[in-house]
Image (tube, rainbow, N blue to C red; front, side, top):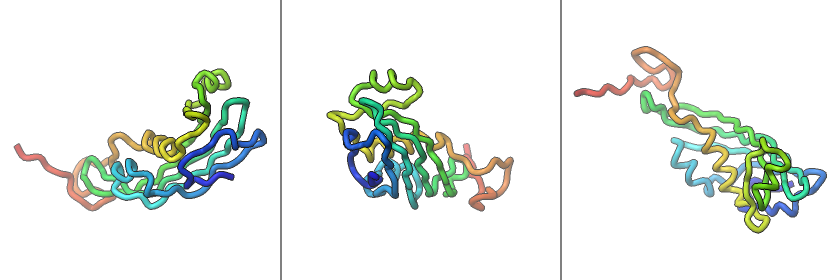
Length: 153
C-alpha cells in the first residue's frame, strides 16, 4: 500500500499483483486547489495500482468535500466531487497508448511520478467551469439565501 500523502510515486515499486494508493492527501501541498475553491475540507484517494510491463495502471476515485463560490449569486455552496481515475503511468507515452489507448497518460520522469501534482490535476480538471447553485428564475437563492447581484448601468 502506498500513502496518498507521499510526494512521489516510484512506479518500479508497484507490484504485478497489484497495490493500492489510499488515504487522505496533505492539503498543504495542494495550493492550486485551495485557490480554486472557497474551502477544502477533505480529499481522499482510493486507487488500485497494477504493473503491466512498463506501465502502471491506476484505477479508482478521488473524493473531495469542500465549498465553491457560485458564479450566479457569489455565495458559497457545498461541493462534493467524486473524480474517476483511469490512468497509465509510464516513462513513455507510447507504452501507455500501446497497452490501452483509453488510459489517460501520466508521465513518470526517470520512473517517478510527481504524485501530488498528478492527483491535484485530476481534481482541478473535474471542477465545474462555471459553478452555479440550483437554477432559479428570480428572488433569493434557495441554497445560499442571497439575492442575485444586480448590475446597474
